[in-house]
Length: 362
Image (cartoon, rainbow, N blue to C red; front, side, top):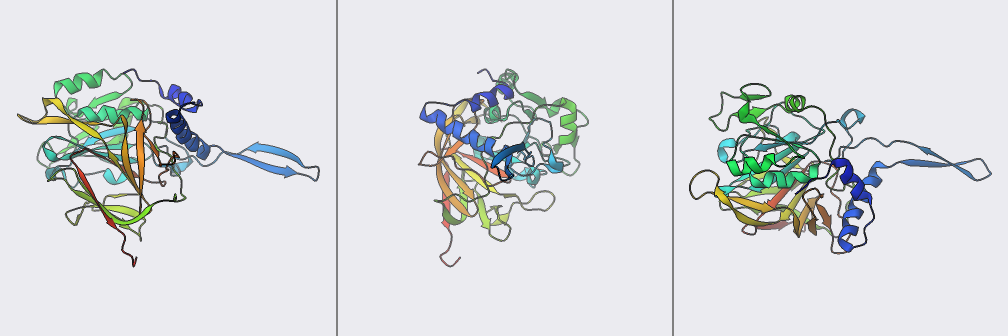
């Protein structure tokens, strides 16, 4: 599938549509554009003449909706790094600094992360693990991103290099910076990368357009909740628990906090639970009887959005590889996320999600 440039994509998003689906997409992007547009109008004198002067609003990070560090969005592409999540990969490094994280199912019931950076950049990210089919299908909506991975089966590597819009970086091709092998982990869980070094390696590029809309005001129609457990499989069942004191959802496994290598808990301002179709891949990923899981993130389906301690039941839709994921209510309006870090959970049909409502006394 041909991929349009980010400039052409933004131009196409701004064009008014006449079908309901296009109105939804256009509405989402108009909402985002409205947050970045600023015009101050003042009444001048008793004559009633109005003067208009343009005044730039503070720059906001496209993937978080938060003020950009230093007042300017870094002119660099989104950087996606494939991070392991089997028990031997924990605790990971750098997830607590990601602008966005996608969690996708891999073979054997485990999940892996696609950690995405643009405004933020930790010192090291890892452990870096191998490529999967779903990776570039997720990343098509991020313009011209970088994807860092550590090898992969040949069919996936061939297909990845056919994506001319994406810059692939196989960490296994490097014996030094911007990658490092730690001495405190057993291979393959000991490979880490420096985001700053990876950006320097690839060179400058355009910042991505926003994928989601953001708004601080809490939408109506949410359900107050205490926690949500996502059972990807019998061996992978993370829980997100709302923390009223910190205003974020905190991740845990079987009651134990999920900690970053720095000792900080993994948290998210928003958790988007995207119910997707998934089909077996055509090739074994890690040995006999280990067919990959192709989570289909282009199309449409149900989604649950967790923000501000509430759950919102919406629909997700994504028209093409280069289109953003749009979250809409039953009324057809775009549901914005709260400004902050977001985790997207791509849950296959075999997964189960359990909600713990907020207690009546809370």
